[in-house]
Image (cartoon, rainbow, N blue to C red; front, side):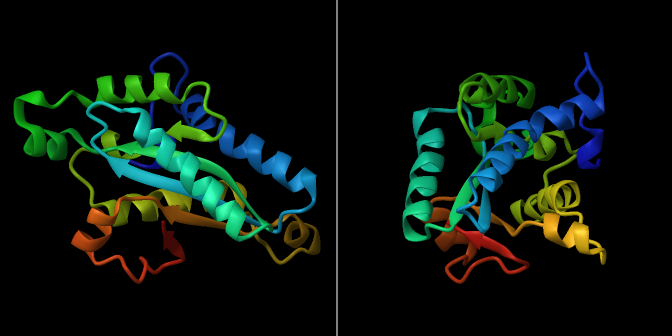
Length: 190
């Protein structure tokens, strides 16, 4: 399933993708208009979110604050919570696992009024469990194809922006997966 094939039963795939990236698009436009920023970051975190809680969102706020304090030319323009596939959550939590539709609904409610964090349902919508590295690869491809259309023309080069994807996770996950040195492929780890 591609990013573009995520379906919203009421509005279709195009509308669903537009909603997913609306905060990123708005914040990127605002940051670029500000003129001070030359680098932009998107934070991405996977997890069960069974259920989502305050600390899931606060880690995005803390990471944004710290990253922008360390580099005044950087603007964190979006953050995405990616709920894991039902297979993974059921294996992990058994009968306590909530179905992905319910977890996505809870995440949408939790992020509705957040200035830069949104839900990215691609991982949960897959026909089977997908490793976080493959989730990051798919999402990175979608973000870059939508927002970084680099061509050889001079006008498009002036419009291109430097956006980097950062995987936001806990130190337990960093140690478990050996991410101390990063992920490679242009994805940072926070």
